Length: 438
Ligand code: ADP
Ligand code: MG
Image 1: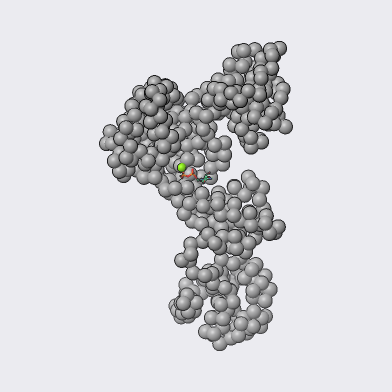
Image 2: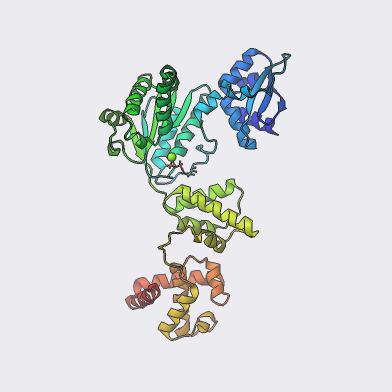
């Protein structure tokens, strides 16, 4: 049940004493479309929940049910609040959660470490555990969809896990700019400053958008100084290094350099496969390894696109009511593949080209005859099918008259080795490959 889920969540993150004091004494009494009503023993408990546990309970409810419910705390033996009043949704109850604005999926647990993000990940962990002391500010830079935002949220979650009362604020640079401009228009600058300067961790995402915003930069400069002087942690991201952001004030550039800047680079194939596998597992999708490799091989720049590809493949299999296979994935991804990419080479085309070159028929290549004049061309055709197409080993085997995939592996390895030692064979194969590329 929802409550059980929340209890377990709190059990993991709170000490036993805290858990017994605050969580064990609370009783869920009612669930509506918009609210969960929770009974607590005293006003002290109510305050504690509202001030310290709010973000996590809202998050937990969302994780469990996908709903955004606002908790209402009721002190035992007091009258039930009139939850029908729409004003309740707008109370400060949501405050902490709203300030933190953390996506519950972006945690360290769901982050796959690879060569391109190893440093960034390590720095993020340090900052979450030792905020304000070691790397301040921490600055991540790198292309889109490589995990900058994910890491920021992970820092926020981790810090709240370790210090539940910490004030964590995550904003995009646009939100910061808009909040600032609104505060001028509404004459609420005081409030704006309180809000931004009273946090323990401030994270501003994509600060390249500060580029031509003079006033916002000015205000951010003061925000930065106030937090820095108080040894509060600041984490920033951008698509490039601070000194490469056009029109970013020199004094900001130099302050950003006080801490640590780490870049995140695109994931290698292994990391992409690991990310897909993790994602597939968490969605309980059954995907064969060669299909995961296939998808990871097709999409090589950006993790967001990689995830998009997986969603697409998943949707395809759901619509067609079939299991996920490499050929299904190929179909699903066809339309999103770069259009300049040449049409996929077929195994049949390779068989024809090899057959033509060595004067054997396609039938003989697919057959079982083991004379030397046929065996080597057959192995070459299998080798080329392996290196020039995305077909799986079993698929290649089946296109060669139903041979086992180990036969394909053997053929591939044998030719790969011979090519290195035999320049004549190497040239023959190059000629065939060139004829296929036309
Ligand atoms: P950025 O902010 O750099 O543009 P995001 O943090 O928004 O990129 O990442 C894009 C998507 O890729 C998100 O859904 C994120 O969860 C996922 N992602 C990025 N890096 C990783 C990683 N190392 N492991 C797992 N998922 C990742
Ligand atoms: Mg981002």
